[in-house]
Image (tube, rainbow, N blue to C red; front, side, top):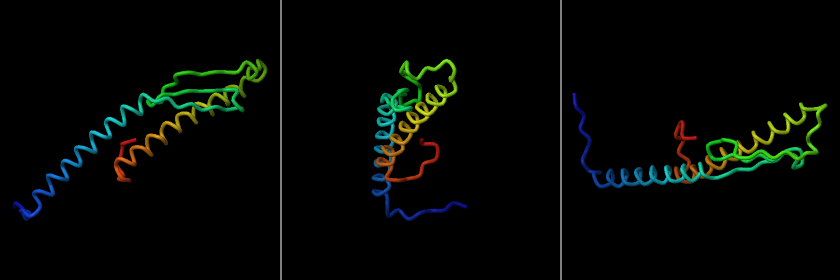
Amino acid sequence: MKVRLPNSGGGNMNQMLKQAQKMQEDMANLQADLEQREYTATSGGGMIEVTVDGKHLIKTLKINPDAVDKDDTEMLEDLITVAVNEAISNAIKTGEEEMGSITSGLNIPGLF
């Protein structure tokens, strides 16, 4: 059994399709832009500085020599972990906020 919908909104459907296509293009452009950006975070009062890109890959890791204590490598490991996680979190948050402005708050699973 086929269901027929009234043909009263043909123009509206075309407009909606154009808007969806524009949104898709805008999202693709923004995604490419976000992947090129760099996000930096520090920990330990600036003793550790990490920069990641929009793909969440570490670009740089700077360690202040004063942060290195051969008798306490666990503290250094913790400082690096905190800085890396914060930089990645910044990248994710920025992506979600900027994509949200394009999608006007639509909840699109798997987008980010």
